[in-house]
Length: 229
Length: 229
DNA sequence: TCAAAAGTGTTGAGCGTACACCCATGC
DNA sequence: GCATGGGTGTACGCTCAACACTTTTGA
Image 1 (tube, rainbow over the protein chains, first blue to last red):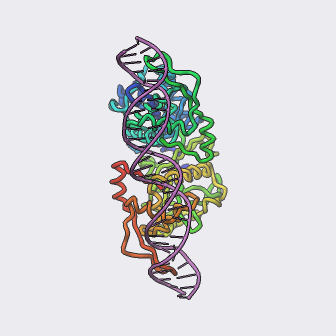
Image 2: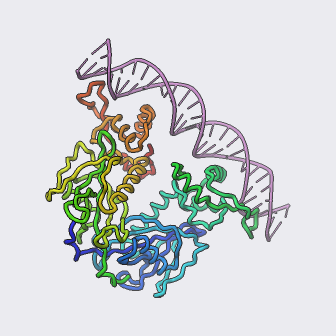
């Protein structure tokens, strides 16, 4: 290696695909751009990587600055570097995806008055840059990953009912699941801890609340256990 | 977004983890560094991304320049950007992994006389930079991916016997497989085409040759088929 | 008492796994 | 004829999928 390319470096950004789960299915958090190019268009939250921060730190910082979100599940997705993906000049972006629980995390529009809003993944507006492609890949990763890793819990409140969990999987996998089989399977893994409380303020029999046994999963995982829906 | 960071851009490189399958298990292609830092240490083949090439093009170009390999399976792995991963200055690297068939691809040492050599993944020398970490992640991806996608075929010659295929899986998964069950399962998928030829020059009954039905797999995949060993 | 969702078992089919012997070939 | 790997079938257990009714609560 040499540093002969020191003066032709691509710019480096991070972008985040933030998923949340609403009543009517999976949602994505977008930001309306305040400047050219693509001024007024919706885009993924993101921005430039600073010199002394890791890529993940950059993603978390941008998320916090632009949406107020912090302390959430975040994982690297893919790096996009097609030469003309930014019309101005060469920009390579490291994309991350994040999962949040809509109830427990409030979105705060960023300081410079750009709007932030949730969109159903099935009714998306036109997006800036190649963000539609990034989003497609994030969605594919999410639907692939929920089948074999218990990341779906990140989209639910800390305490949840089995029906909520089942609906989550039904929305992400886009197919109905059998209630009895689902409960048997998920409880059989021994990764849900039943709590004392039950649902409140519902006009029917209230359901038992559970939480995900995060640490127990970490231990099982080391021993080669694998989660499968 | 703004371009206020235009003068503090990290350098951007690509690195490739090239896997091959030898008699004694899985191997990785390494290059001995000719310059500081880490001069004389073994490292992954790679180098700087040029202004007008995509990331994958950069990876393929570097592989060709440094090892002579071309037209091989290559897929993006992960992007590594810890601030101090290069002792000189900030360098972010987009890692790729590649699969080659040792018999059909000869390695050619690069023009500037750096050595290139295959190492068993179980007996690796100390590596430059964070390349050991990159390699660990590539190995994890490979072992995870062969279970559910037919990428193992990339490590075999175009024509192969069922025993070769079974041995491949046994080496990658590091566990023995039952011959009859393996054959039943793999043939049952209908993705192997039996050829007319048989093995040559063996001191026992020669085995039938097969090839992987790449296009048939692509079609099945669209319909939601999934490959599982 | 009605509506609405919670909670609960059984059965059959298909799949994965375990297991042992004869076959074709080169030397 | 012997050594070497190639090639083949069956039986059992387990997991998955299909399926309907009773219970609890609030209104």
